[in-house]
Amino acid sequence: MANELVNPQIINSIQAVQQATLTGDIIKHSGAGKAYQSVSQTAAIAIQDAADQLRHMGTIGTTATGVAISQLLATGNVKECTEVLQQLQDMMTNSTSNFKTIGENASSILKEFPTGD
Image 1 (cartoon, rainbow, N blue to C red):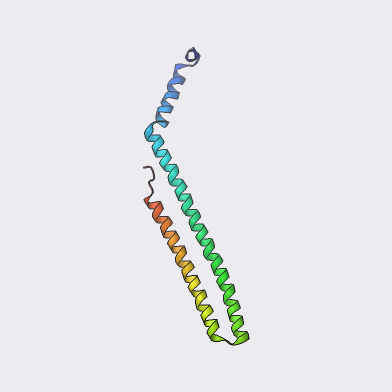
Image 2: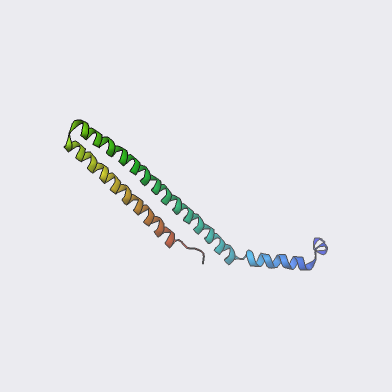
């Protein structure tokens, strides 16, 4: 009885839309595309977090370098200052390496993730 009240052309249109959008392949590709977008966003956030960490380590390193040089000028202890400055340099090198590794890994994961094509 409900179908008698609805124009058959409207019912045919709705059925055509459902067939075009709710078939297994369409749903599968749509889901894969959404998953790819989610993984892509997660990779971007990981890289942003790594960039933030690198920036913070740079700030810490610069501040600590200033303190070490200040102590050198105050005490004249070149050996201790040299050791501290080397440790700070190592810290920045490790932070830069960490940033690069995170970026490369995020990129690699994204390249290998299926896009739904």
